[in-house]
Image (tube, rainbow, N blue to C red; front, side, top):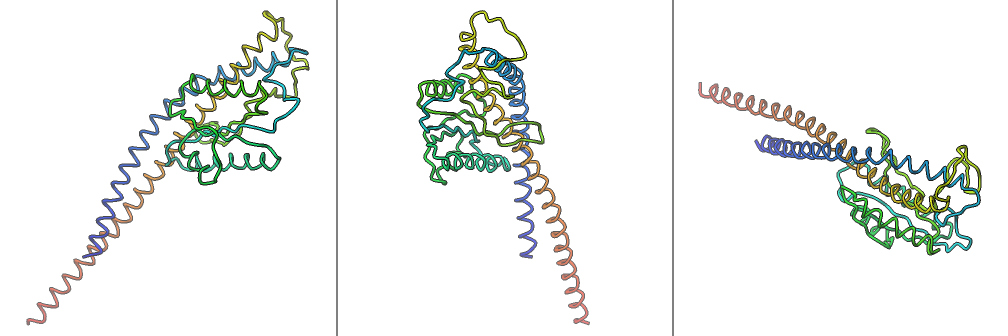
Length: 290
């Protein structure tokens, strides 16, 4: 009898957990859809302005820009911004991201660099507190990153970099590739890197006639490129968090359903065993009275 009551209590608890996880899955699905639309809306602009800034910088000849070049006298001070989540229950999202960020931090420290670690998200703050890594700044980008908030952070980085206070800025975030693939990435935000082996002093495949001049164009393009790159990273982080939470909650709901079916079978077996025992006792008692 006690075993039956215990199984029944577990069945009720499992059904309650399943309802909660299904609700969290539906909420995560709704948030994922909205955040994916925001990320997709900003991605073409981000990619196009990166391409344009890269081509203009590569074709500018001997025109230089403070955001392109490394410092002649490095300070050895670098900034690492880690974008994690405020909440858990999103699978391996925070674990994979924070391990990747910590590996980058340790590798830079091993090379003699002085790191200023900044974090967005309560999970990152708690993680670095546990690792005894002091945070220089704490940010709160939230579930719907605001461009003004993110751009303000990027402008501070650019001002410090141009003033020679820091040598580089890296951003650790979860890059969203598809619904089934999200990878932790450490992106170099500053100095602005020109891919493909090109350099600011080299040529480019496209010939440009500058109006206004190359320096004026880069003064407009490069800061905007840094701002939207950081904003895109924040959007990708939110999309990755929501899709991984959606998958984790679906798996939890499925597991709860399987456990519920197992408990139901155990309950039926225990109940049948009890009925069989009671019938045996009744028959034995009746036979004893004869």
